[in-house]
Length: 95
Image (cartoon, rainbow, N blue to C red; front, side, top):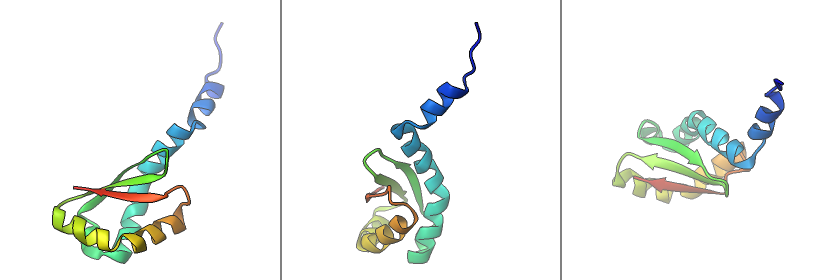
């Protein structure tokens, strides 16, 4: 009558959309390390929000001036991010 839920949980965790969301949440810690090396002042004013299924890391930025600055540094940031995870294909900054 009762079944173990271990198998169902493992199947759920292995779904690609769940893995991306979990990895996106883990990027909160990784993001701070990456951005501090590129732009120290941006570390406290940015936050990695999520990682989509197609590999877009969504980063929330505190103000439009910092957004413009980070867009100039986007290639260097992307290079450092991809050194940590090959799942990230693109970075999208929003304010």
